[in-house]
Length: 534
Image 1: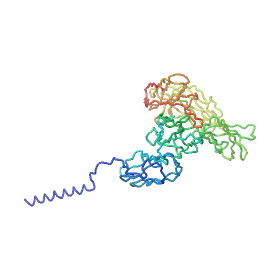
Image 2: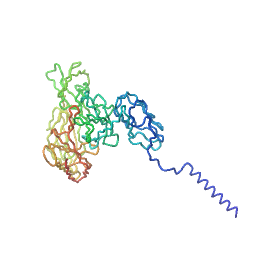
Image 3: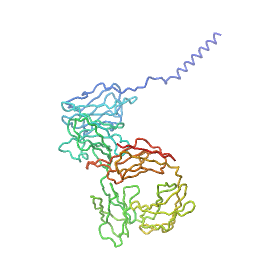
Image 4: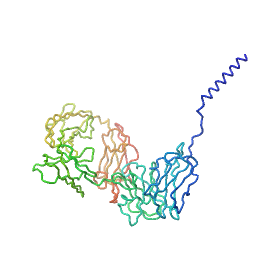
């Protein structure tokens, strides 16, 4: 009996030991560290005056790392030669800053680290730590505050540089293209408000940039820009609102290139709609040209006939005040064969026209060689229209619910610029029922006409739009079901499009208003929206 009890105790002990071994390596641990690192001291001390050194040390109570320094660290005024900040990528209990540039006299410098300083274990950030010193007798303490909006879109971009240029004898409107600002801050990745701190009294030009290459200067082809008209005076209690926009590029023609027989590509930047291309020199009496636009790229195609027996020629490109002479070398390349395609396939919306495009400019259309039949084989009357630049023929005809339309184009219905004709072409499109679509009615209050009302996807793509020169209801009918944002454009010049701004002309973009809610346009559902404009 005693032996049995002893064996039982030994067994219990073994089980306890095994359980203890099984738990090894799985400690319960303590509470998660959520505390930011603490600065113990700085040398020289923060807000030091009469700074003469080249090295700064910041000491912490624990190991820290520096993350995303290139985006997070903002130095105001900017330095021509960036300082060296260490360590990068490794943990340390201190941060060292080596100043590599020559500092200006009597100037306050601010190093704003954003959220780049984090502890080594949990990466808790030391939020927006700022180290400030002055090379003069005092710390400049004035601020300029405001917020950033996007002139066109619902939300502004992140990491917007907001800058002050000193109004002195060297300042011109072209300064923003060539020189760094006097003071700078950045909205970083989460806020749209800004505060440019530690500035001295004076008059300044306030400019904001989505600075894509981080050089603190404006590149029209890459950066968005916003500005306050005129100059601001510090100190000031006013809060400034800056609208960021992408300028329309200044027009420039690119070198021409032969891409097919009797087809030359002219690339461009800017607005092509008033672009004119002319070949210099003698041309045959029957010489003819056409110009079309590439569907996707910023390219115009110059088509010509008959074939030119020249090695090279000069072309003059004009666009408003722009003029340039370009040399083109001809190459012996085969001409394209005619290819015709429908721009709509499958289901056609009641609001849309059936249309066709081709890889060679259309020359003529013979409507007698074209028929449109519905599902009952009834002949449907139609009209056509042609877009020269797009090289698209559109077919307008009345469409009924739940119907099928067969479009047949017999041979020779279409002739292209070079005299090629089509073979028989057959296309089929179908309509849905009206209840498959949604209708949205929009009423504007306090509107200043002319106006443009647009329906946009959540990604910002414009799907539908209407222009009005005077007061009216905006009825969007037979919409594909989906969720839409509403954008209202104050089309001041009545040209039926949104016009961006221009910094050199000190021209702000046209005003835009956004309806705050996402509109759910469901099938067989007709939302009615009233928008009160400020």
